[in-house]
Image (cartoon, rainbow, N blue to C red):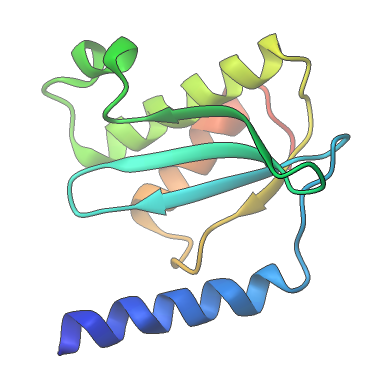
Length: 121
């Protein structure tokens, strides 16, 4: 019951924030999802409802590079990877959507990695 109510509370926080936060074609939304084993990041244009760029710990391209790293180091690498892919598509600035998670640990590491990769938010 406790694990379920925690996930429900996170979903509620996320929906509350999403009322005032939306990605456009000029400034898409960088969304973060954190599971117990991995972390996922997507750059989303909410107007067209399309995912423009994504990166995660389960990506075949990145899996080998992430082996042996701590979870926060993996998150930083994912942030850098999503920033690199976004820059290849011509995306410079994004709106950061932490997905109802606290801005500490892996979520902060992903954001720092994305900033180091060249994304502005």
